[in-house]
Amino acid sequence: MSTVISSPTATLSPTSATTRAGRLADRLEAGARALADLARSLSPADWQIRIPKDGRKVGVVVHHVASMYPLEIQLAQVLADGKPITGVTWSDVHQLNAAHAIENDAVTRDSAIALLRDNSGAAAAAIRALGDEQLDRAATVSLNDDAPLTTQFFLEDHAVRHSYHHLAAIRAALSANAARVEGRPTSASCETAIPAERLRAIKARQQAMWASGDFAVIGTTLQVVGELLSEAADIRGGHDVLDVAAGNGNATLAAARRFAAVTSTDYVPALLEAGRRRAESEGLTDVTFEVADAEALPYSDAQFDIVLSTFGVMFAPDHQRAAGELIRVCKSRGRIGLASWMPDGFIGQLLRLVGRYVPPAPGVQSPVLWGTEGHIQELFAGVSGVRHTARTFAFRYKSAAHWVDVFRRFYGPTHTAFLALDPDGQRALETDLLSLLHSNDIGGGDGLVVPADYLETVITK
Image (cartoon, rainbow, N blue to C red; front, side, top):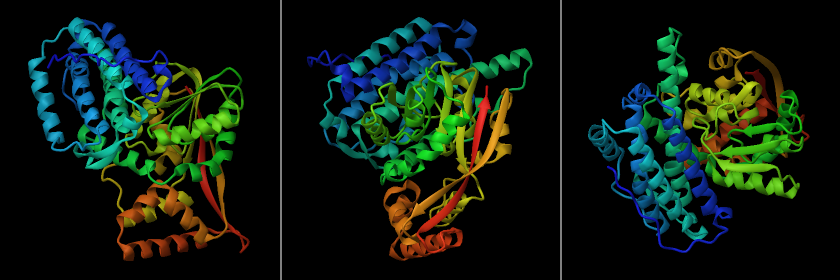
């Protein structure tokens, strides 16, 4: 399992770092460096700690990440050639991981770091050799329920995300071990109640859902929420701001308009591209757009003055881990600003209605729990302060039929629900949606006006 892949022989342009492939490769190398830096800081005892739920030693997991780069690149090349990835199952992956753990139980820190350096470098070089056409090619992937994925999406979800996923798990394990040694209670964020294989499948379906339709059409109508949250979080010129699960960038643009340096993240590349175009159209230049998972953010501890999320992080399946990441990357006395739909508001009603037709994944907490004060207190226990403000956003459309048409085509949850139903089911869902809209409409016949309650939260670390 110590395979080292060789770099491709293609001549690379000196401006490759400015290409899509170049930026993708840079993020992969950044994740590998972050994992290597953490590995170098570990004591021999830390290297032997077992990771909760995973069961493998920290050192084995670091070596595992390094050893997987060749396979991840090999599979990505299959997609880049326009061919499907077939016959690879999670059972195969588990067997591979189990064999690797036995074979490398005594792996040394230096050898794991060296392999991480060599294989990540070769993987990055292979990615830089890909053109945009290859990155955009899509085919079905057996590991992802035969969903048709592009080469770029596969690389983001597997090769790039892999190091950050395990980096977060290692940090949580180290924190839990330190707490046990010191006699402190351990945090729920150190473990996830959802098995790792199932969590990955859930996240893959979520990514596909939000990538379907075109959420940017709806997202732009929510801009006022980002402006209000930026004011509530007291963003100032020169602040380093992170927007998590940013979508097409409402909070990102609001912060950038206040002359902050903003990093805008999401796990759907198409939404980030929409945000990039919006920023460019306004001449907002101090904004960086990066693909990132809210549950494994690729950033250093205490890196940002302000961390924001508007109707984004609430949809992460592992609430505690996502909250822990927001806290981790926020500076001491920094602020975390959240906008989350309330359970009893219009969006809460909408999600329950859609869930009757297409049930959500079992065992996953409802996203609208983030819109309750009690859940926020549990997720962010131990912070310096929490301030809540109940707010209302009004959906304004020409009519109920117009709203259904827009949300059916562009909003991930309703778009995928309609696609999953037969014609009778689609008609029934449409009828129920129209009924829900009419019961919440306060427009008085002059267009549709539906108030949707949400919780604005500002947390001081």
